[in-house]
Length: 212
Length: 212
Picture 1 (cartoon, rainbow over the protein chains, first blue to last red):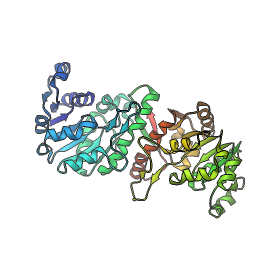
Picture 2 (tube, rainbow over the protein chains, first blue to last red; picture 1 turned 180 degrees about the horizontal axis):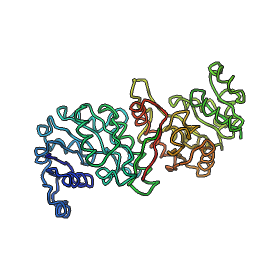
Picture 3 (cartoon, rainbow over the protein chains, first blue to last red; picture 1 turned 180 degrees about the vertical axis):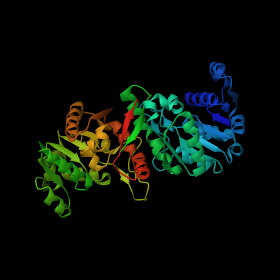
Picture 4 (tube, rainbow over the protein chains, first blue to last red; picture 1 turned 120 degrees about the vertical axis):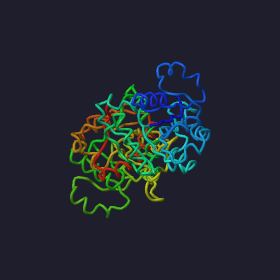
């Protein structure tokens, strides 16, 4: 499948490399192709493009940009290039401007995923993967044989179902549907706890498993 | 030990009954003793008092009031009755005034626990137990043999240590220190996710286990 990954930081690189490994036709979108020099040598199957080129290329799109810049990046990607497509939103609206711990740019009665869905009503936004570190997003079996949860939120049930299939191809076993796009508030507001657990555990390679 | 439990809802009743069961001298504080009629017949070891009487009685105190009313309840309890004592804050600042899902009255750059600590600088506030349902707070072994996490936040290391001992007496095994009282933001901001998981699982008898 043609995949367009917007954002070339750690998350964008991890998602792109994994999608290419799984045989998808990947383009990674960046404002700064130079930053991908070494990475592109290692990942020659993935093309590099602008945000607009990447959004035009992908049948399924991923927002892996920094949360603070996501709305701008998606505007640069072009509303027409997003229309009708599944947009997997992995971003977190973290504000590090006042140091540690980060706060959220938007929260509580709204979320970044909802802002993105409102800005692009024709895109089929599915929030997921934002609750784990980049490596674990795409290799979930590296922790506890994959026996832990990932969440999905979105208004489009068919889009969530397709994203769940993709997550399974990454290795995810337990995929919990939290509800419509407003439930992305819950997944984004989990980040402050994730940051504290990261601090207490001294490693990002962890996740939560629901026990009942 | 003399324990004062402020709040006579489900959480206050669960904490009080468990503390009495463990042999502590419990007083439960309420604005409305009538509401405890049936409960007090079943829990004759626990005394019933006003917020002030309960706070005066307890060597260790528990804020089990509704988050929206906690600051007022603690004011009624009397600053002098809180001074120097461990105040275990179990409350959640949930706002259901706009229906489901609830939002938080305070979040992101502040928390209810911090507001309580600021209002009562001589109290030794420890945030904990707010991330699980009332029954599970005091009988953690009823889910997955207790193999899941509870969090503590607070500025006073000795107070956190004493609260951890109490939690162990309830049956808690994995007690994770998130940091100072500002880390209570993380525990409180987890609630929206808890609410969504509750909706997806159709039961409150669950918790998260950290896997790594």
